[in-house]
Image (cartoon, rainbow over all chains, first blue to last red; front, side):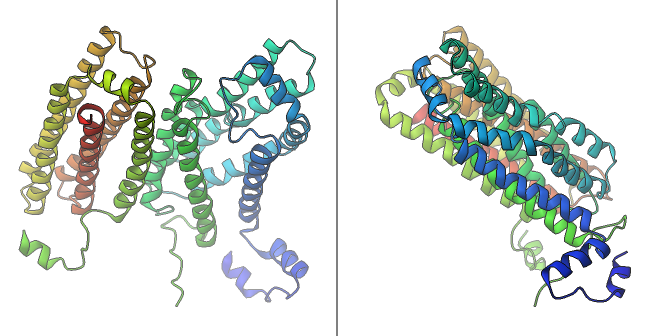
Length: 263
Length: 191
């Protein structure tokens, strides 16, 4: 297919012309759309969770009911607009899961790996993002409710956001195993090992369910900051490697060709 | 051995380069745990000193000896593999795994003894760190069993026997040992 594309006339010089040409002739256009959707989603996720809703870094777990109600009041519009965006775009995570599953179908391993991954990660947005968004939106929209109920929503939101582990633990393990077994060299071996670091963070967060303060609380140095840093490194690594996968893709079955060295 | 090293001039480091990246990341992550522990210890030294007194240094020292012996065994195993004494290498890696099992059994025994004495994960911050650091380390020992099983799998068949993979397994195991020595120093020894 790439040979067919190369026989066509070169893409026009203008930006619109180039986009049109790639849309019609580039056999990798669907993969690129998935990749850019993933990049855009993570940008939006960062803006919404860190800047608009103030969910990251998480506020204190030890606050009393009055302080929690005040937090909802302080962030009222940020919560509504931010999670409004999330409810609209949450489905984009499917494109990311599809691209990762695609990477596994390009490997020499059984397709069962990609099916398991998609099945597990189709559940991931719920504990990883949507439960928090729903609970906090309800709290922001019902300021007249009993402060005890608002506090419950606050606790449920942040324990779900930081402390839910199993889905990500198993999903990451599946991807790691696929990379380790793959003979087509779709991803480098170090990425399989980086998966171990990421899946261990899912275990490190577990004490968060017990503690309200200190390094193991949901805003603690270990349970939140170190784990988030590992996750950010892991995410940057896999986004970069998925991009390299698309560039290297030859739509064949054997080992994925390496990128040519620039001289 | 010097002959083998000399004839493999292209090999700058033992094992796969990927395992070294992994070790680097793991050491950075564990360092962040150690620094956090030190900071909290500085903020409340009396609590940490008092709690530390309830740990058995003998247990900690026994754990350390077990892991140091295991590191020596795996190093001997790699050496045997390099000299193409594969049966001996398999036995040495098997004994390394045995040491790892002994380490975990002793750790389980120590944890249960502490719990019986009333020192649990949420008793105070020192014991939170104690269970967390020793627990996450035991997880690494368990992952080490997978690495060492791959090493034995490599050694069993003449079709495999990649010295790079065998060395990589050993490097991971040395890291597990290295991390334990620091944990031992921080939790059991430092006053």
